[in-house]
Image (cartoon, rainbow, N blue to C red):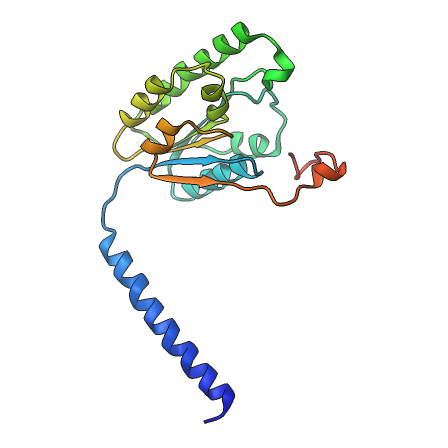
Amino acid sequence: MTQDTDRDTRHAERMARKKDLIDDRIAAAQAERGVLLVNTGNGKGKSSASFGLVARALGHGMKVGVVQFIKGRSDTGEEAFFRAQPGVTWHVMGEGFTWETQDRARDVATAQAAWALARSLLQDPAIGLVVLDELNIALKYRYLEVDTVVADLLARPPMQHVVVTGRGAPDALVEAADTVTDMTPVKHAFATGVKAMPGMEW
């Protein structure tokens, strides 16, 4: 047996074992219900990942609701694209990041208005996916009560999926979530002076 043949044989055996393990896990995962995902951490891509799920949901014919809690811009590429799609409701409820507004009372009022809207989406079984963009920031600064938010999330329709984004996800939300991704920064072009541009919006 040549070295290449031996390598190929070992590879085939490893892949066969791996396939058996994965097939067993897929067979064991039969529950169907809405899931709560949290994208957090200091790395970039938390919101972008959630918008990827929006595209996936739309591809399956689902209705989607998006509420942006902190971001006040309404000229992003994702909004321009998804707002034009049937089945999407998109709400930019923020007035900018906290260092821009510099007015806590105003930020609290804005966050509470956004949550009232989000709650209406979370009570609508016709909406298959709800994206709560930068909600974690509103929770971190205590513009909203974590216990109230978690209770509303857990009371949503059984088949509704929710994605929450933003740095500093509180422990209670992490505990309630089904899937949590902590995005870790390695490098970012902004640190070297590259500004946000169309298609690359930091």
